[in-house]
Image 1 (cartoon, helix red, strand yellow):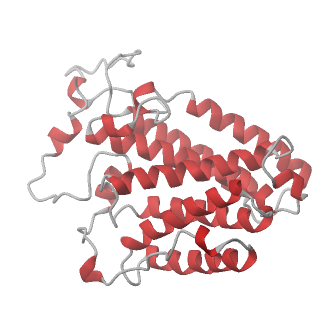
Image 2 (cartoon, helix red, strand yellow):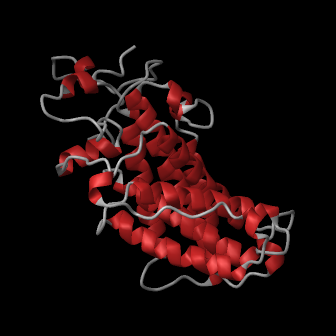
Amino acid sequence: MKEFPSLIDDADLPSGLNVQNADADPKCQVMIAPVLHFKLVRIVSRILHSLYGIHAPTEARRISLGEELNDELHEWRRQIPPFLDASQVEPKFLLPMFERQSNMLSQAYAHAVILVNRGWVMSDLKDSHLAPGEDMRPDVSACLSAALSILDTINKMFQANRIFPAYWFTQYQGFCAIVMIYTYTIRAWSEDNEFCLRHFRAAERCQSQIASIAQEGSLAHRYFVIMEEFRSEVRGHIKIDPDQWTGTVLTPQSPNKIPQCQTLTDEELSMVMNGFLDPGIPLVDFDFESCMGSGDP
């Protein structure tokens, strides 16, 4: 029995019972991203079990686990085909379904990197290990890069009007990245630190973008309350020229000012997370077969 689905479209399956495993195929298969996502979920499960279990690992064990899990994530990333790798192909140039899949994989990978490495940002490291430069720990650098990657992807999605209230996990990933940046800014801030200020501005921008689609009482609204507390703490901790602030961060709007999204079933949510569905379009009379087959050249 196969552990993972074959990387082929349902329409390409033969009618007979003798189904062969798919070999490497130059076509852009729509099932590549879901299979990669499933593999990444298994790695994240190990991350949560190993680093966030009831019994916290010792520092030596945490270092060993961090190296092992980071290696697993790097190996997973090497499996992403170029057309789904946001660092090689800009997602906006892809078909809408592949654009969503590329963004999904990019966000999920960066979030996993944060889960592995954020403990070092919050631990009692010396300032020299947090400040930018040669002395910065690789774990801290990887965590910051992953957080900025999430903020950048959300910004691109927002500018293209490709982020919706139904993207609840994207909002959660943004929330984790923003809190990480705010925490780092407080811990690593030094006078005239343009490096920290640049990160902080990116986090403020993303907070405003999440707030702009947050309905009152929603998870995004609750995230905003926590993010605003962190942001206020940062602004009270660092001392800079008021002209350097980005301005007022948007607050969640009333429901009648926010684009409404339909309620999705569990199956539809799964399809959204794997890039098959766009929650911004109505599902009434939606041609699912056309969607699933749109990956053919």
